[in-house]
Image (tube, rainbow, N blue to C red):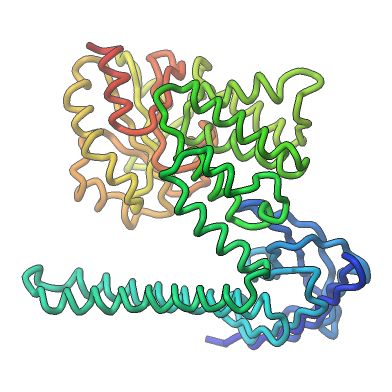
Length: 446
């Protein structure tokens, strides 16, 4: 196998105030004439903000004066080959060399303290993950009574984790005021504050800080805030969403990202009433309170088509023999149908399967059909998972992963996802888990 040898030189020159220049060279087979894309981080997403063509000599340039705010960015070669970089106006120059592909695995930071810290920690994290995977594999082969070896492996794993944490603290202490340190310290503060409730969470994380929006820590903070709410009613989640939007409203970029992110979150995990609350109170009408991008407007329109009370799409599901059958036909003679979108290798999905088996055994005769829809890429794990988990309900898969037409039609964003339909395909509930589905069915099929 031919090893791609890549040498990449990137220079980020920060001009007075905030003007920045991003240029460099790439020398590798097949790179000349290709496109290099610069992406800005927004939560866990990455948005392309510029691109340039790589010259026949391997040179590229994004412009002499570019306004780049402090935060995480990515350089993308051929779209999927991406590398993380911190850009910070405090540093006049960032120089990085790449000696192979993928870029993430062949990084040498020649100049930039921010990025040297980032990549030292990334390397340590990869090494720790490798140790953990090796320990897990060896444990799976051990006799459960071999306590001495198990204890030894536990100590090896614990030592690797502790070593990584010590390095992280060292990197933060090198420059406590760096962007890298800011993100790390904020993340640790979030972890400590979850049990203390949303008021404390709001006091330690600034949801209107656009520099934090340019890192994945922003999404973590949103989820942590919602997890810190002691929920006793769906209305509380709508109130929590209102609070997050108010906290983000001091910055237009943060507010715009927040509304889209909350729509995604509550669409995937519920409650559906909060999605409707967000649409009705912030996005509806000719003059919405928060301006919608074309992308968000399209997303909202699609979500409304599969919201509770709407009639779900009559998609066709593919069985193990390759036959496609319309959902309406599969539910003929049943009062309700539960769609269970899962992956055969998803641990969270596995955790729901015993409960679904129990629900199927109890409610099938009362009019319930359960239909498993596996978002698997191929057949490798599909049948073995059904056998190992003892699934009693019928399961289907197009073996196209997240390209599943059924998943797209029902706007499925995560696995596991449960959707309860009536016999006419009207969406009546989107239970969070098997227990919530059981409670819903006890009300409907006593």
